[in-house]
Amino acid sequence: MKLINQIKTEENLLINAVNNTLQLAKKTISCSVEVFVKKTIGININIRNNIVENIEFNSDGALFITVYNKFSKGSVSSRDFSINGIKKMLEIAIDISKHSSSDFFVGLPDIRLLCFHANNLDLFHPSELDIKKGINFASLVEQEAFKFDKRIVNSEGSFFSNHVTINVFGNSLGMLEKYKSTLYSAYNCMIAKENNVMQRDFYYSTSRKIENLEKPDILGKKTAKRAVSRLGSRKINTIKSSIIFSREIASTFFSYLIAAISGDNVYRKSTFLLYDLQKKIFPTWLNIIEKPDILQGLGSKPFDNEGVKTNEKYIIKNGILKTWLLNSYNARRLGLISTGNAGGIYNWLISNQNILFQDLLANMKTGLLVTELMGQGVDIVSGNYSQGAIGFWIENGKIQYPVNEVTISGNLRNIWNNILSISNDIDIRNNIQCGSILISEMQISGK
Image (cartoon, rainbow, N blue to C red; front, side, top):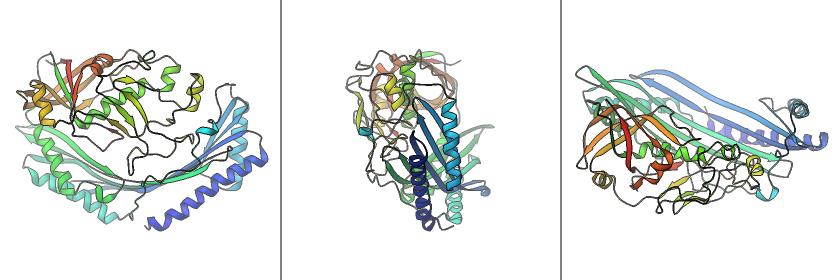
């Protein structure tokens, strides 16, 4: 499949669809209009024990139209990009708006916040959808994992994907912008066995450029090493102890902050941080900066889902919460302006204390290194936190043995204030980039 030759044709088709929608709306209706179209083209390849289990081709796209009829809203989507199809969508959207309840806060963003000239963030690095190469990549990862250790006895699968996404956005305020991105991913999960007990673990790589993916041999060895390291897992007694969240789950740890400062939760008064804007919620040395313009960044975007230009800003500065995450609607509900976060966050850079992971272990001396979390035990209203955990017990700054079947708990407000240090082993595979995190004390519930 010649992907590269197809992209320009698809891009022109999407631009025409958005432009046609705006022109038809201008001629036929007197409402404000917002139009967004997104198309993703790519492949997913899954193999297991060197057998191809499935190959998926994706070519999914839809046109989304929202009309604002005074203070009522109507939204509709379709895969029909024809003129007649667009006309029908506009009619349906208008009809929906007439039957929707009036809401003073709905409407297009402030024109001063819109992105009329999208920056090139170097997100687009396409390669052909080569099925044979994709299968070979996934197979080599699995083969290297099996070769690493004789205790690797089975595979839960090896995965490779290659996708291109085209985004085009326009509205009746005169904005019509676009950007394209590529995303390559590889994933492997292996099973290790010893003394009739089995353990599994996984590793993955993701990048905007195919050449920046972890090489198959490295990816396979990392997966196997992680699976083997879990053999001999033990339960531990219930205890209060220091905890390290490994870099692989550090992004999950900070994702709770996203929900807690989301505009929807703030205006509904359903967050435990409701009265903490401009107050200290982290140690004074900790900063979080959102940088949506990092070249090739996994969380980079020139504008948000409403067309608002994205900008660099502090989320946390010297431990102090500096902003909510707002779209146009919840910003109006709060008497504020959009922060350009309709649709989520971008690249969050978490500050660290420039120490090695081994030094972090040494600083902890004794405690639990958590490498995997299970469950969804986080209450954003109260801040109470409880999740299943898997990891390793540390004594004298050294890994002693793997641990499973424990639960860690506390309150996020206390947990965040109890962060002692963050190491410089930053995981760049996520839109939250952070090193491993040392917490002074948490409750560990075991046997």
